[in-house]
Length: 163
Length: 163
Image (tube, rainbow over all chains, first blue to last red; front, side, top):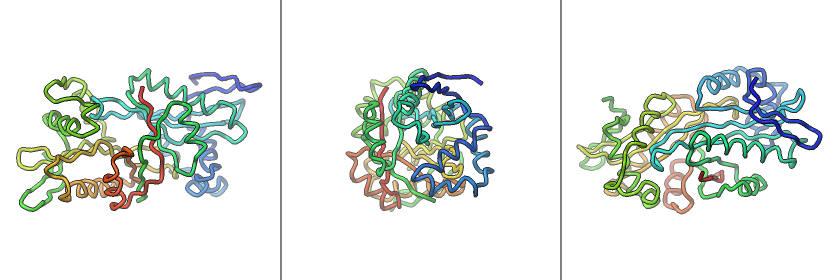
């Protein structure tokens, strides 16, 4: 399993690596533990992972997508998805899109989220992207400040339509 | 060339179809004619299309992306890109993302933009997407009202980092 980067967070060593199918339950736990995700991704014990496994396969077989986890000892403590999208706008620029960033509560405010984002921005540069983009719920005001500290500008409205 | 939908806009018949390589100059003209795009995509006469052709190839060979044009007689009068993105969040839902929507000035406020978006939302339902998403520059206030009339909610901050 290829380690993309190793971080030292105080006494903890955290490895950033590409997710494997074995990580699916831990990733879903991180999604469901989130205040907004608990509504959308339910409670772990009542969960059927079939749909999540199908989504993992779709992500894993397409080199345009990278599903990332951060591991501390045996524990998956953070996740994020990075997608590289071609487009004609901005002179045919590839754009990187970040989705589903989650950090386990005991690992927040310790630099892990910033380290994950910094790795994602670096990977986007290595792939010659012109832009990194993400949307964040308007209720997550501390996330907005976090992304602005990393250099993001809240220049756009993020519009969603549920089907 | 498969016509996806034909619209009657007053006296004009407009066909919605998948873009071909021959449409690239017209699409770039639509991107560059836009108030914000003129900065990013330059002036048509001074333009090298090499990067745009490479981006078109990347979009065209991947079934996750649909580059759409609307044609009236010989003229390309609108364009939009639709991408279908797998993800673990929201129970492994596929999400549709709309980028680079442009309508030629003479065809604005005649229902073409709404027809394009309605087609995109319908296609997203046919592909079992749980969500359609897009970002729109905060300065484009009439676009915000347009998307809200179509059922979109401006629930998120759209954050961008230029590399």
